Amino acid sequence: MVQTLKTLGPKPAADLDGDLMSEEGGFSIDQLMELAGLSVSEAVYKVHPPSSGKRVLLACGPGNNGGDGLVAARHLYHFGYSPTVYYPKPTQKPIFDGLQKQLQQLHIPFANDQPFGKLAEDTDLIVDALFGFSFQPPVREPFDEAIKIMESGKKPVLAVDTPSSWHVEDGPQDEGIGAKYMPDYLISLTAAKPNVGHFKGKKHFIGGRFLGKDIADKYGLDIPEYKGVDQVVEVPVDVRVEKL
Amino acid sequence: MVQTLKTLGPKPAADLDGDLMSEEGGFSIDQLMELAGLSVSEAVYKVHPPSSGKRVLLACGPGNNGGDGLVAARHLYHFGYSPTVYYPKPTQKPIFDGLQKQLQQLHIPFANDQPFGKLAEDTDLIVDALFGFSFQPPVREPFDEAIKIMESGKKPVLAVDTPSSWHVEDGPQDEGIGAKYMPDYLISLTAAKPNVGHFKGKKHFIGGRFLGKDIADKYGLDIPEYKGVDQVVEVPVDVRVEKL
Image 1 (tube, rainbow over the protein chains, first blue to last red):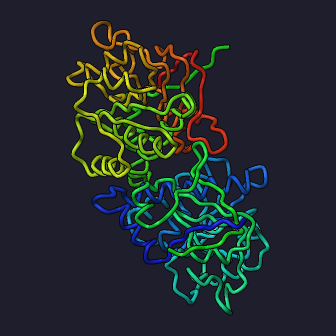
Image 2: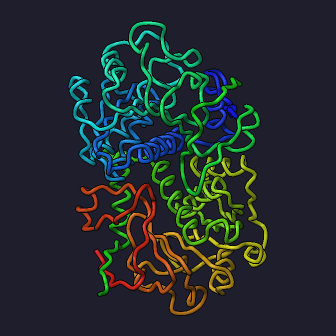
Image 3: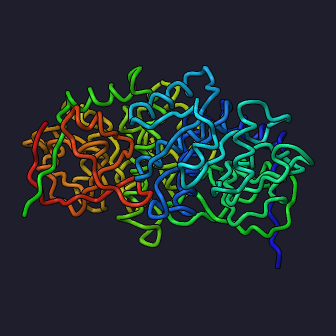
């Protein structure tokens, strides 16, 4: 029996984030990004434990998706990996400045000026934290090169929240860069997005273990059944998608 | 062979926190408290999984130690526990306001006006997050009652960073409230404190998996050998203590 996975379109997904960070919700962006990035790092550990190769390339975009990638890089380092960060368009906000400083203190290399193809050759896994659910085409430089490389499928890719360049509902672009991009793994944050119906990779996780019943009910979401102290949970790939 | 555990006195412990949150360190208090509280909740899970009883009473003091307890309460809720929070002296700072709001949204009860003895009767485990390493005696109302109850040993206690009322180096007070206080479990945050030499409980954990090699070297600390994606690691109780 094919299960149903409830997904949030861009408007309710943004509203939900807003609720968490409202006066009533009480969360700061620092707290949410920390837990989101931690769940990304735990997903990496599940699909690609350090024994499978310690090199992880984190491709980080200019928005919050990229911030999740920066947090994940720190945790991966502490888990025993050798992360490299590609973050060519840093955002000038205190949280992004701080996350970069933390990585610099750990001597994690930033390889922003190197060709993405070369970086991909020298890694065992790519984390795609370029764009999130609010992405609007086209893919601009320098990220077009990264998408092309990930699209080539030469190295396994774990996409954060949504495969970069995909439309949040319609999935891959009809043509051009990213049209054939299919990451091996996907981690949805807080809730899956409707484009997960186009995901034909190997494993799909949900992360962000901070969703309470009231907010889940408000948006019609089910809270995933996490195990133990895990910050991520694997969900079936072959599902029927319901857009909320 | 008795191992040596390196510990930080109050001055270097405060300096280390300062380094993490300096311009160079890049951490915010929100990030560090989130990871500290998460490690407290993972320690609870290790000593007292939900199958041993889901009720956890979090005794939270007015400082950062109490904030770690508030964060732990949230994670414990998501792990399937039924937390109750005792937080009679809330601090008027945005992070503490926010942490309380997060718990209120989950309908986690705050039992600040109830006698601590009654709260202890109705729980399976107490988390002592009253005072940290900068505590100065005497124990003032209303916390004296909580210390007396924890001292009675009627319910298992996990102490956060340092057993409340203990001197950071000399351990339990010579006489009066807390003189016989010996929690069953202890989780040290970032590094053990010298009073761990007086700890004769069952298990000792270290948490706060964000310490990098540069800062560890600066203070002469060893980075604990965490496993997998764990945010806590158990260390031997019967150790020789070296004060840095």
